[in-house]
Length: 638
Image (cartoon, rainbow, N blue to C red; front, side, top):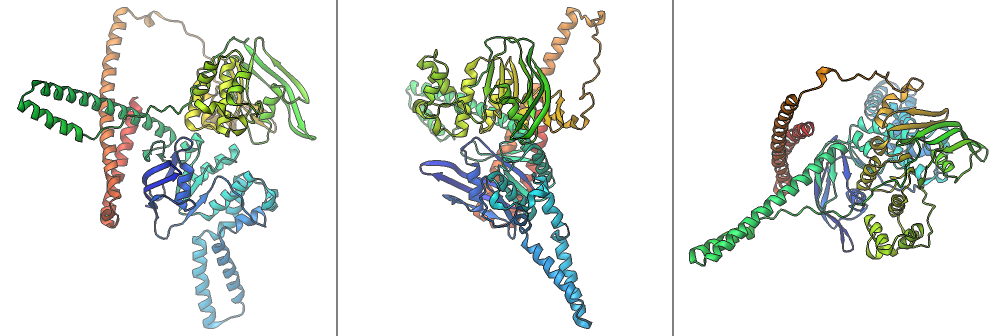
């Protein structure tokens, strides 16, 4: 165990951020801390590393262990260059190297026993230097900086001259070369382009130490973690697996909790009826029996009702009219700023019903293309043609389309004057703006709130061609999934720019990658793009079209055959449902056993007894393995 968190509670004013959090992180584990915005993920990391005091509870690191923490925002006050800042991350290695060089120099001036002793010391120090990775330290420093998006020309830039996002990347580079036993990373990919994110993913996958990550990039979490701790409720809920596995398990957990609640409510209702019936007999024995049953009922530990979370926005997208088949044609588009060419001779088409993701490195010109299509920027050359009946709904990541002096209510009424007051309030409530919040001024909104009000306006537009620039920025994970669902059910056409690979993977039917040498097309989602991107210049993975085969006489089943088939399918379905129910019951039992063991970890007597700790840890590991198999089988069946 590298870290133990016990009964941790933290409040700001009267609001509890989290209460009685308890969990352990084992060596080499890669763990995500997940949950909606405001549930305390970043605060938890700050409390763990001591930047924020806890109200109660304890944080214990393993003896002699090291940790490194990356905060979301960096303001490193360092007089030197980027390279120097990272290079001096391991002063112990640099000190050993200096001592080795001094020993090498001293060997030229000593002899006899002094030389023997010096060579012994040199050999020991060389071995320690090698164990600490000193021989590869220089290449690690350079490789890490390059992996996170810096060029060798950037190495000599002063720290005082670079942006906040660049400082975060430098701070991450410094942290990674220190190679601590535990990494705590708060939104580590916020300022990385796709190539740098992939580099960091590969680094973390192969990292031998433990890692705790807070991130909103679900694709990143899928690739880098093997366990998720959910802070959405008042307590931490533990799930094995990556983010996708966590979501499936959480849905199962919520379903199980709902079933348990309903089952207990029926039992309580039955008991209350029995008690009322016994009391109605109005006899001494029946009254005593009623009182006895009532005492048992009063002592019953009630299953908490699953919270009907009204914290998710309600978004549905629909069109008021249908466009022609050809929605957008772009021919030989070029654009420069201040004499610097951004892109040239870009051409592509979009057809009705397509969901097209435009991806590429930072600064390559993706958002500029969207702005040219929306007549915000003029093109230097080229043609843009919209198809017949096309109406555009545009989501601007910079949120320039607002009147900053407006209230939310006024903003919606100005955009849609035909809406009555009740309809405006209902729409705003669907996007989590309730009661007096509708009178907040636009200028006072957070990034996430601006995103929600933009989506509200987009929903009402009825446009049949949506152009979205980074629509998931500032949205929490629940809101991202709601947007994904809305886009997948939208009957119009979509062109969007997004760095959220999970979002792209869930929604795109085609990917356009903008590179320095032009536009490259992939007919599939992000997983398909990853598989095929090295094949640019081929047929992009389009297989040869097979001829349609008509129905033969053998394919035309009789009604008797259909009836037999339906009976077989019904029996198979019933068998499958029984298997699922049996597995879900076993999962519940194993999860309950895990919870009981975790409670025993909190016992001070157990915490002081290494034998008991080892035994409990072994039991916990065994349960984790059994649950892993059960969840795999459950996922296979569903």
